[in-house]
Image (cartoon, rainbow, N blue to C red; front, side, top):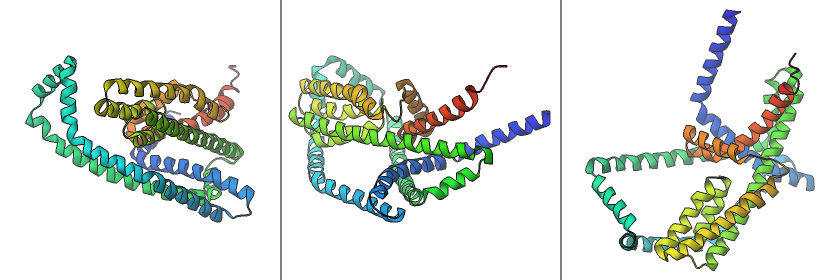
Amino acid sequence: MNARFLLGGLTLVVATLLLWELRWVLLILFGAVVLAVALDVPITWLRRLLPLSRPAALGVVLAVVLGLGGLLSALLLPEVIEQFKLLQRIIPALPAQLNGLIREVPALKSLEEQLLSQASLERVQPLGEQLLGFAGGAANGTLQMLLMALLAVLLALDPRSHQRLLTASTPSFYRPRVQLLMRESREALGGWLAGMTCSALVVFLTTWAGLALLRVPLALLSALVCGLLTFVPTIGPTLGTLLPMGVALLLVSPGKMVEVMILRLILQNLEAFLLTPLLLSRTVNLLPTVALISQLSLGVLLGLPGVLLALPLVVVLQVLGREMLVHDVMDRWDGG
């Protein structure tokens, strides 16, 4: 019994170490699964309407996605480019504007003096190494995204074969349960993706309209950032607000920054407490504390990719925990 216990414990330790060493591969695989589910939702809907094979439906969906992406780029890209050019013209004047703000606010002036007193050549020299590391990380991230997209297309092309492979790796008596778990996980993940996409689109449009009405520079660029960061609840909206607030402070006035802050607070609360719960009420119900803890934990362990994939992972784990831990274990535990 002791030998069997030791062997089981050693196997568990080795498996845990192996999973940790392969964490980036597993992260890319899970990201590919999320993208594959995002493709599978319109594929399934299209095949219900038209007598198409899955490869043909996938081709149509990819063509539509690329076409819509090209159309949106043609409509929005010129203005985004103009706003980037405006930003490039504004950047040289930022030091003078910052100096003016520092002279007006005593607290900022004391902070500047502290930073200058602590600055030294030894502390500035590692900056080049950090920039090189950032460039290498960006290139590695781009390669991972391309690999993730390729895996997602392959998974969406033939999901049943991959499902059969996963089902076959489980005991025969549990295979119907595994099929149910995969089906419910797919439905929950698809519902979360659809709800968050609608929420991000509404945030983008309302933020763009609000910033345009307030006559804040770089309104489109700021709205795009806020919309994309909606996919990172709790942390993302707050980070997205910093860009339009900073633009309003540096390019217009502190009063305009307050107006932008009020606008974003209203939109964030409407999105967090009304829109998103309404869209996700039938699919997932994540507690804010669980969402925040999962983002912080995976962010510490895996960095930005962990933050981005934290919520879809929690959506799947919530389904697995409810079915496997609650229904299969806790509900059948009589305590005798």
